[in-house]
Length: 255
Image (cartoon, rainbow, N blue to C red; front, side, top):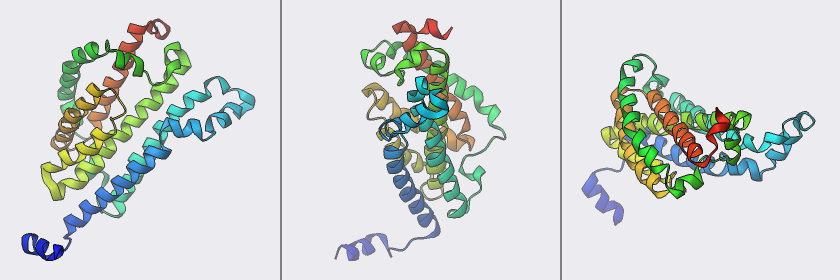
């Protein structure tokens, strides 16, 4: 009876080519979000015993910073599960070229002023919220980043790499994968899971993720590339870490 009602209101329940592609994108995205949540995050590295193995490599030469490897694991996992696998799905199952999924370098330099302007608009907000106790307790994720030197840079490299994955996955695979079927509606659809991955962060940041998802998704479609968003995202994240370290007395170790 339910199917009969659906047929009367929506026609035959058959999938056209664009429906098929959108279904693949949504199902694959859901699976990859699940996999990354349980096996791609720093917590998996810490709980799996990898930290002890890294500490033993080279007769313990890396033991002092073995825990920082959690963030390299995070970044490299993001490249695999959020860049490599979605790109392979796009090429093999969706029959798209990488450039059609937002992997576009040509012409992006003309759009950088827009992203720089966005960063400058956000900078006063970052300075303000970096004074909140919730942000002071949360950033940087790696406590030893305040020591500066190798600890700081290992953490930041891993942190930056995972943003490559964030933008390629949400503003690339999801937005460009869904756009042929959903058009501009692909942006708010992508923003739902994008906001949800921020639920463990301070509430102001999770709320801001709604705006960021909508704006960055729209700009990716407009510029036909997610790559400028990578630079903006990394810039904002590193700025937050530096501002918090400046407030907590750790900035001197970086200079």
